[in-house]
Structures are given as C-alpha cells and as structure tokens.
Length: 357
Image (cartoon, rainbow, N blue to C red; front, side, top):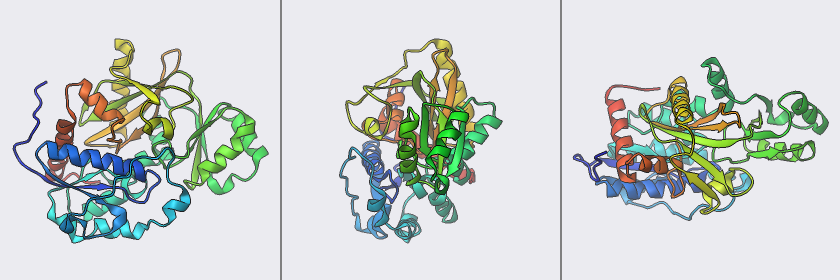
C-alpha cells in the first residue's frame, strides 16, 4: 500500500482531550499522540484539554500530559472537574478558528454524543461517529439490544439500577439464576474497562458490583465467555487485520490496557482464515448496525468452539503507544500519521455531504 507521510492540503485541527471522565488520563495520552502524529503528517494541530476552559487555542496553551497512572481517577478526583467547563470550552469561539475537531476524549460527554451534538450545533466538522451512534455505543444496554436485533451474537446479560444493588443475597440469586458464575460486571456507560471486574464466585460479587455502581447509574452483569479476546478496527468501510489480546495474567482490565509490558498483542491474530473473515464481517455489521462512521473498534470473545460474541463497539478508541487501532493499521501498511490523516479527511468528507446525527 502506497501511503503518504504528508498531505496536499494542510488542515488546522483542534484535538479535544482530557476532560472530566474517568478515562481522563487515557485521553490526555491519546491526545498527545494524535497531536504529534498530525503534525508529522503536515497538519497544524493543537491539544485542548476541555477541563481547562476556553481561550487555549488563541493562547496556544498546551494540555498537560502526565501519563496514564495504573488506576483510573477516583470519583472524588473527578468531582473537582466541572462539566460546565467542558461545555464552555467546546462552545467557545476558539473552535471556530479551526477546520476540524479531532475528538480524543474518552468516556463521559466526549463519547456519549454530548460533545458531538455541540459541534453539530456549531457546524464544526469532527472525527468519529455522530450523536446517535455515539450515544448508542456508549450505552451498553442499548448496544446489546441493537446487536440482538441485528442477529449479532453477544453474551447473555441483565442490567440493574445502581441504586438497586443493596441486597447481597438477592444479587447472588439473580446471577445464579440468570447468567451464572463467573460473571463480568461493568458500569453501563464506561470505557477502558473502568469499574469492570469479573466475579468468579458469589463471595466476591457484591463488592465488585458496588464498585461498578460508583461509575454509572446502571450496572451490566454479563455471562463470562471463556476463550480468546479479539478486536477488529474499522476505517470507514474497511476492516483492518484482527488483533488478539493476551494479558500476561488475570484479564484485560484498565491496568493491563495501559501498562506497557502487561499484555501481548498479536497482529495479525493467529486464527484461521475463516475466523478472520467472520470476525471482520461481524465487526463491520456491528459498526453499521449502530450507525457508526469514520472509525471505531469492535471487541469480541471467541469461545473454545470458535463461536464469536460481540462485546462492544468503541467509537473513540485509544491512540496511545499501546493502543490497538494503530497496531492494526500498521499491520495493514498504514503508518500512524497516515491513519490520522485518513480519519481527518474522512470527517471533512462526511461534513461536506451534510451527514449529521
């Protein structure tokens, strides 16, 4: 594949990063990588931490890059970061000075459609999916229902309101009679495995569920699928090589995702041609079922019998040194700066066509 390291037209791009979600550290790291990659591709790019308020673009203020800590920010840490500041930053005149917004926010308002809606109202082009697809993908319950309606296999599950997780005996009974143990417990609308854990028995369930409840108003209890973890990245309507994720110990949690050396990533995944084809086909089907555009990453479990189960679609996948989409793109002959240029140019094409929502 003949890839360009620079582009014919220089694009002025604001990279939104940081913010006030539990994935703040990941977003800052992603944003730093994106800013550097866009500059390497010949674009003008600046990082804007949406938690720091307006005026950053005109002042050329750089967002603070502190790296990703072993654990996500606590609920207490996040409480000092204001949602109003994020909205003020995004709706400020600063963004009218750019050709494109590259969204490197993860979780919260950056990924659930809120920021996308603000940018639509301001008629500013932005990368990734629109309001509806972003909201649907971020809400695991809604995404599950769409997968089922689209004949996309997904693990059995049930959902409880966080306020209803108060009776340990009742919860144990619900899991035993529902999805069984082990059970994967996740906040309904978080990414990067924030608040996610596996309860392998009744003794650990309640504490794990209460922790997940801190991060969302709903908690999803999902049947654990033994086997292999696979992911496929989508770039417009093109699927990239499948990646297999092999954590050195335990499971693929926040720590394993963002600590270098904790996980092996095999790309292309050592699977059969048929398994590769089916993973790509189901990944694209999930992408289209949710109405995604631009780019995304679709995560799967593959059982020992070779059956694929779609876990979720990540509409704003990470772009850090350990992130999966850049690894998959590189395996397809697309270097990081070219990947970013293609995402940016795709966003401008969608905006020119008047695609919204």
